[in-house]
Image (cartoon, rainbow, N blue to C red; front, side, top):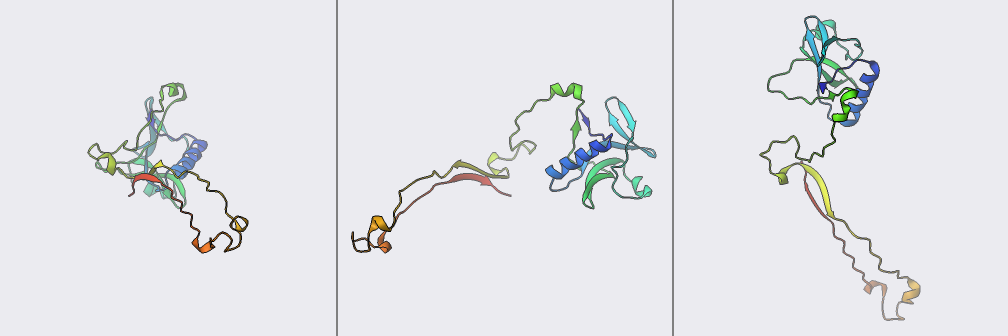
Length: 178
């Protein structure tokens, strides 16, 4: 696999849509784009490629384009696009990889638990997560009582005020919200 390189407008639109649907926090995403002197290039296993498509840039001046060393996808002015960016050595960014179609047979869809990507020192109980329901309430039918069954208030010695039906439902869940 390689870090993302964008070689067409359709690919850019696909990535924009994917990020819009999957990244509500609008983070910066690392790509393979790097500056080589005055030109920007994509880095792939097969070598460096000059940008063939450059409509992915977010609005900025030519001077601003020359400031950073790497290209990140970021959200600005209600759209996703590219910005030059200098990455600090301590900074971690999410990234998107791409696999050539002829090599896609080697991709495995392995299950990754909620703890994937977290430090191994975190106890499983304290991993932030939404609720997991272990026991759901069961539907119960207790019959139907109406005025005909009860008769008038004094027919059977039962008044509406004294009729109580108690129903208990159980729901058990485990969570550790943030």
